[in-house]
Length: 227
Image 1 (tube, one colour):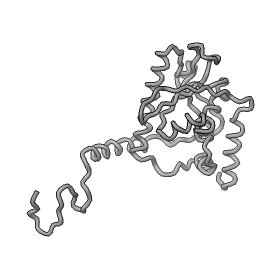
Image 2 (cartoon, rainbow, N blue to C red; image 1 turned 180 degrees about the horizontal axis):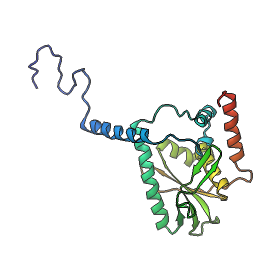
Image 3 (cartoon, one colour; image 1 turned 45 degrees about the horizontal axis):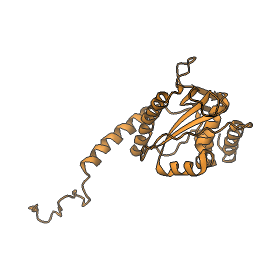
Image 4 (cartoon, one colour; image 1 turned 180 degrees about the vertical axis):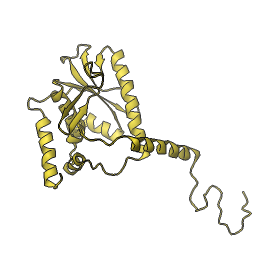
């Protein structure tokens, strides 16, 4: 291409400010991200502390989240990952049911997810498996689906759920305790490569983690002077 605007500084393939012009894919993603961010901002603000928060190894983040300070708003790419996780959860549930497990995702008493509430702490479980193949553990068990990136996947495969993902481990313990379940079938799937569903059935400790996690969060809030 010949630049007929002498002295304009125009370079083919670059925008007027000298930067490389965004590709069609990038421009479409901008529209998608903007739509996701707009939808997220329109959602009512959470008035409770989610079960996953209490297992976070960062005490300061737990305390501020308890107060309602969640930091910067999620960006489009992060929201795309969240949306992918929701779709993947439904897919994993379908696979689990096809494999012969009697998975219940709706609480018949409430018509919603199996859930609990204890003061400011709330949790919503993915489901409960009430029967299925004989695999060495007793039903019913908690069912939790997680979509993981490569790093998180490798940590759990190498060290197990408790060490590899303290957040998910704490979340599972809270659900087991409040829903009176003795074990959890965790079904993480590797989003980056969509590997097969791996199963893990951590047992609920005799002295389960709810009192420790909730007490620790309260203590962190007090130490930071939060109300």
